[in-house]
Image 1 (spheres, one colour):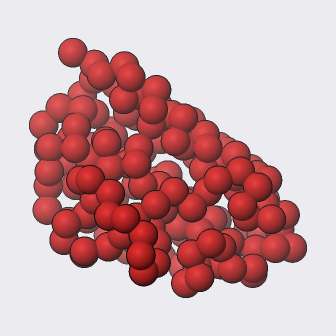
Image 2: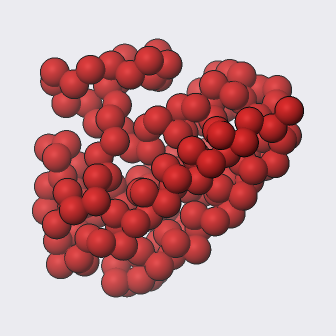
Amino acid sequence: MLPATKVEQLAQSIDLVVGAVRGAPVDRYHNPTPCSAWTVKDLVHHIAMMLLVTRNVGTRTASDPSLLTADPVPLLAGRPESEWALLLVGAAEPAAKAWSEPAAWEGEAGLGGPPMPATALGEILIARPTPCQEPGLPRMKNADRSSGGRWFLIFIPGRLE
């Protein structure tokens, strides 16, 4: 049975992230975010990579491992920063659509680490579209146990300006 609520939540999470990027002026891409280790440009780059990985994992299409460390992400390579938000908008729909299929939530899948139940991975994608390791932030339930990282939603509309 397809978890319709989870599909909707993932689509909303993707929309929230992409909407925040669309609202971030390009001239502020070098500004810090609420996560002091990341600039807005770093996060836009990370979101581009995650949209591609999210699509690939949802469709069980193998990703090139270099995608996780590519700089710039192929989606953004050779394109001016002024086009990046629109490129993310274009990548968002296929990422969300991939997880609208029942098969995306079945079996096991992975984001470059060991496979885990696809339902758990889908929930992680809903809860943490971008990483931040700020001291004092609460650890989210079902967060990435392998890195010990702490995760929270950075992209809150208006917070990137």
